[in-house]
Length: 181
Image 1: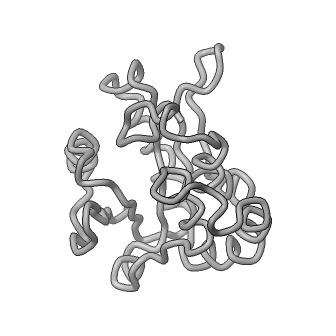
Image 2 (image 1 turned 135 degrees about the vertical axis):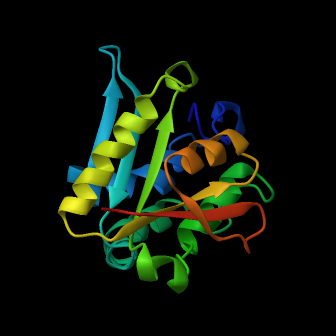
């Protein structure tokens, strides 16, 4: 929640706080926990990276194993129209599918979040490089991620890590990708 608004705190945006992590984090922890790393300074999670080796297989598993329970708990129309909660409820009923041209050469994908006090100190790079090594060892030729164009700091960060724009046709969003060794 504390990074859910383009890297800023989203706690005040949601009436149902568990929706955001259920939509963007939970499936990774449940379905591919071996590709999750947490930054913990002893006081609890301060950041994380999660990923999946095969985006298409992950999307299919989510459809079978993750989304049905959430859809039952949060039926379409269960949140007031126009709210952040309503947008998330709609997403879990109609989850986005990564474009075919993006996954063709970059079949893996990731999500990463760090609390602001851990940003800029190299910890994001450490977490991501660990995931890069895991995915490369598992045979992935490349990975992608989605990022909001408003999150300019993140876009610059990913550029420094070798990510390039794969698709800029979605309003307010970019798909970035990077090849793996």
